[in-house]
Length: 148
Figure 1 (cartoon, helix red, strand yellow):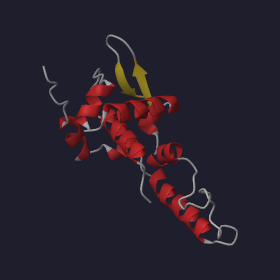
Figure 2: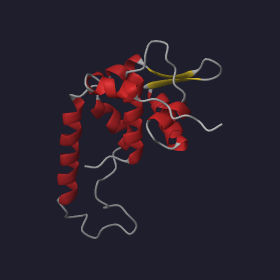
Figure 3: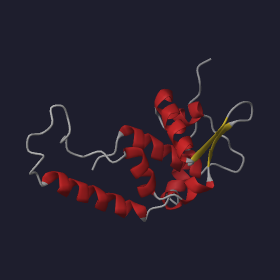
Figure 4: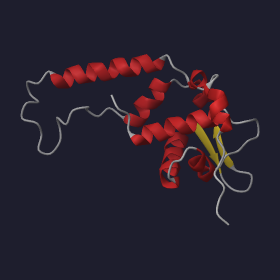
């Protein structure tokens, strides 16, 4: 199964916030630069993760992004389920709908494979994703210098 670019960006954001130093408040623009992601994509990921209670986005002077306690304890499976939704992996309901869908076993097999994939991610927590050596690499990321 391939994750959407949106889920990929969201998981990278969560991982970077998980290794932020005490008091380090990163802005959406800063994290977008660190992770080489367009600002607009990062802003959408921040908004969605904030809705889910994974990230806290503080506005104004001294504001920034923080990983919540829920975000720190969350499993990757839980986050991916929420971000990817329940849609079919095959285009059974596309327009026009597949003429085989009434008797097709592929849809069920793909749904079961998807659930097995996500179940395997349930054992992976955000904390476990950012342990060494990943922690060191994530903390080395810095924002690119902005042009003057």
